Image 1 (cartoon, helix red, strand yellow):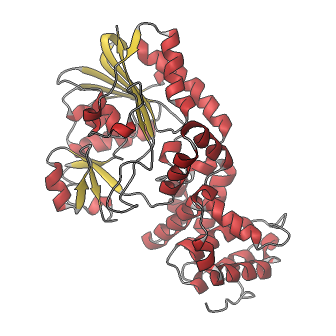
Image 2 (cartoon, helix red, strand yellow):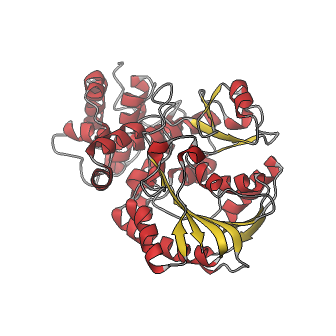
Length: 444
């Protein structure tokens, strides 16, 4: 690795510097404010006005930084004799971004280090630690192979999540979940028809559940069939709950907390009269755009589900707001932005929404409750307490053939419980799916 010029003055025109600045700001903002990386990136990238390549690099750096944040903090901390310096401004996020590049991205060592040192010099608080940062980063580059040889995926799982998963699923499965999260996620599509044909055309694999998983990493909007509305992006596990509703043409179906709309379009594709309800106007505008692209229709209502009133429906799908810990592989920032107290607050909200969903289900109707969470509090325990206070509902067990024969994703009570390490594929990257919980209930 070429030695960086650690005392070089900042230069606005240094190639790649703007991308590193954005990556550092993203990391700092998500960790400090607990915001979602996707939304933060969209807002900041637009404001920064970067070229697509630079914006893409910034996002890649931030994403891998969160995917490997536990390891990065550990290895950087071990090489800071006195720990991370206090009152050092952006020192920590700059070091995290640089370490992510050095250890996990195909970026030249000299570029990662040199541009990090330039960033340190841009802030008076961090500038005095430029020599320290330079020494630590150069050491990481020299010791990269030894560091990577000793990786433990559980290191990249916050303590509270590791303890929760170990208690719920056992230590072996907890480690398997963490290992799955270390892999870049594949892209899954739900197709209107002919999964085999689209898999062949897009170099994909037809999964047992009917989703198409792409082997490549192409830009979605440039793929055949996107403009024509032949398919939409949807994780294979996320595609299951709507199918479990067994919608018949002409039925009235409510999709509660509907945005961004993957399940809405599934229900509309089945021929149902769908009412999609969500409180977020901007997210519903995206849902409408997807419906238009796909040539499908649904009634879209901007409302708080907790107070939404309508004539009871034949079927109700409630994809409740949750901690989203089942999506960590696709959204690694979730692991570090969420805290245990968030789960408790969300569980209380889920209970209220579930009671409202029950009121909107007509006698003899079906109710699907689902969350993209690995936490039992937001899944199995939520249904147990619901049934204890609602004797007019009963479980309708899901059968393996309804989910492509994936019996390992069903509980003893016939509830859906997908885990990130399930669904073995051709390679580790092409294996797995999101962590989802779903229960099908019938109103007597």
